[in-house]
Length: 633
Ligand code: WTA
Image: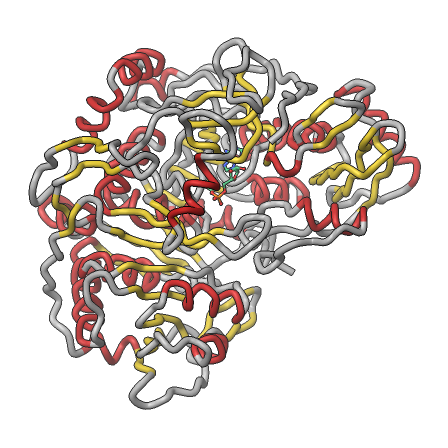
């Protein structure tokens, strides 16, 4: 990695203080104080968090760091995450809705905690009868339906390791992930609904599984009533299997350090990495962040719009919400089908109080215009969240004003598949600065360093690193521990986790993520993160979304090529391009040399909605693209 630091171009000066009502209901009232106390003794902080959970047997040691970077949390402790996600609620909220599902066609299903317990046990028993044992891997290729969550929990219940593959991935991507995990069983559905059409999933699984010798059985959930081929002895209907099973299944006693799941995440090159998370630490870290950041109380209805196939879904649709005993919404629905107000109609109908989504969705909604959310009563909302990419200040303001009606704090949560839990985030009482994820969560020590690993002063951009281990941290890369060490602990000199993002910290200690280190632009010797340049584009009134890449320039090194999506009703023209250029230069100064603006209807994105700048860069420069199995279109 380079020695140089990043320039700061964008200064967002606006600051939002918490309202009285927010402070009154907050679990944590004094943010700075809690951060300070936790920093004095992080292990004590996490041990207290662990005491809030149910364990079969208490840990002997909070943290074993004798074999860095293979940190082991709550060593000697015995637990099962499903006891905390399901069983513990049977005493106090058995008849409360645990999972509220709304399908794409509008069908609604409500599953109480008592029912969830029964369903999880039944399918856990069914998996056992199919020959699944502790430590075996089960791959799922399912829509965002309750059976996805039930399957994850059923695996965890019996100590099997789930590997959820997002059901939008191709058969090749699915095959590679099954092969790497050597899964014994695959759980899928006949199909799912998307934009009014039935999408078949089972045939994709058939093709993938044909090249996967480890797979013995395939379980199929009937979702779409589609006519799919079932191979006798190998393929089983989910509903037929569970009909025969008992609704009681004892939770397997797991070591805190036993694996809970593998989730594949792709880097820029090479094969996807199987990120491994474990029962104990993951349980503690996800529970504490869920409880404090979203400030969940008994009456909340919580909706995270991600798909359970991503880490956001694992931690904050399934495990986190269920561990705190809230009602978690799962949905197949996309934001703009049948109309651009689909999600808002759901917020109104289900009286959602906490809404957690991604900047890509917010920008898409800005593009469609505020008349769509304005058709609905969103007054039940009290807290908003954002995750997955830096949120541009302009999108933040729109979200705050149009969706939150200037009364809901926005939790801009920075984290990764690898971190398992949110690491940099405000709490509801934090003063907010649009575009900043604010400060590390209590107990987390983050820093910004240069290429030699040296800590940087305020407002100098550099590499974002985490200097203290945290409970939900990944344990390793499945079957490739060396890659884990090389990718996250050896890129820079120093004793810390390297996140791969570039960021700066301002004079108040607030963190501003500037983009992925791989995407950094280099203009006239200045290194500039993509976030700030794109935010300047998005702050032009006609622009909904923008992606920038650096293209070679003889004089400047690199100059900016921008791809721009306009808001609904705007027409592209050379005059508009000139006007946008002028606006961006005014915002960022003369360093931002824009070579060219290209108007587009769409940007290449990953299936989880992140802009894939290297695809645009390859197009603009004629360089090779690298791995594009995660590309959406
Ligand atoms: C980016 C998603 C800025 C970042 C949970 C990170 C963010 C990558 C934010 C991980 C945020 C996520 N602000 N950037 N609030 N949240 N990112 O593994 O680049 O899908 O490294 O995990 O998303 O993506 P992943």
